[in-house]
Length: 144
Image (tube, rainbow, N blue to C red; front, side):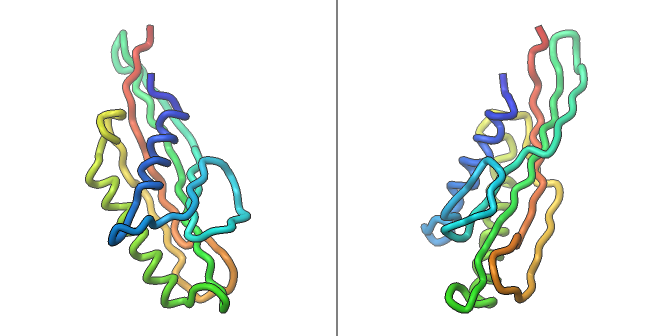
């Protein structure tokens, strides 16, 4: 049976594997709420809701929703605004592409889809959320 934990782990594995020019994009990927990062960029994956329906007498349909937040440090001692913009634009593009090219997480769910996106591109000192994605995954489960 595909569970909340299973789907969260599949999404985490997908995000951890993102690369650009053979370089790992995210230094840390967490599947729990955290805000004190030591390496950047970092990502946090949190479940935000679910719903279900009876599909047939033997199957239930479940739709799980997750929020994936990407964080990047922007400080005078760290990355410049231009470096952060380039880095996060690449991360966003690779994230979208990864889910577009694996619509069922290697046949583990019926479908997975990036349904909402929000970006914060502005000059700001200190770590902050640079991108947020809402990801939905649907599964059919036996109800007996």
